[in-house]
Length: 427
Image (cartoon, rainbow, N blue to C red; front, side, top):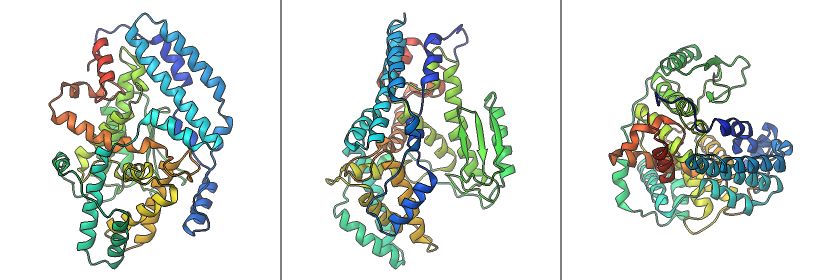
């Protein structure tokens, strides 16, 4: 970081912002019992679409939070450094949009929810939908070459939804940028071995005050890294099932690159920089953040396709990039066919496909009533597009690569680059 830096330019603003800051998706969590009942009834076709509750929104003080952000925005306008002012106004405006989005989720206003979601996260473009069509086209081709009747049947039905899967052949060269997929080690690590690897990474990366622990309650099934509490939580041996399973040495190294080497390190560096706001992120930073984190994961694990296909495809067909807007049920049925066609193992293929389709749709439709065609939580598209953007930036020879780790910003966002240039922030 900047060795001659004496103090941050936004010290007077950052602590207030951090106090008010929240992640919108945390308030869109559903109760386990509500979610599981909806899943059971949905899969049994007793209901057309699920109806989730969002209990955390009941305690969210919308007006108080909004007013405090507006007050902080006025304070930011008085900052002597206009670049700092610009950075804070952009981020505060985004937080105000999140408040409006959550308010719409509470009242069940799908159209307003989607409007605010698009302002915050954008939505997939027709150009990016070409990447989805290639993946689906490849999947259909592989499924037709297999001997599985179930996969062949799913493929036939999938083709009825997408009779024309022709895509721009120019994008094929972009897939050549991906590192070759690494064959996973056979040995699955125990929780104590995973803890050791993360503890070593914490030390090597100089992540002060971070702790690594194994869950003893038996409830945790996913490995997680919480940037607020600076804690890595690992499931016990009975429940090891990370988001990026299997838990082999190669996979865990890739996961460390993703969670600690990117997310945690960028936060740490950001809060130590001239602009402490970089610790929590400039406005609309997520595309660059997740794109880079996925890139760092793929450097170790390799990849066949860009990250986040499932979510990107769901949002794309949900908002109607193929000409038809869809609700939860309609997107689910298409995803289920896709996963039935893509899963090679014959063991529990239907259950796997249903679980994957359900979980993807829950993420993409959270905050909505799930009933209105075209209304989604559009955040899901940023992972894939961010991943593609990072690869293109790197291969273009951009000098921006040199400061990827200064904090949470989007290296492909020109406004972000201008802010960092103006403040002279480099690694």
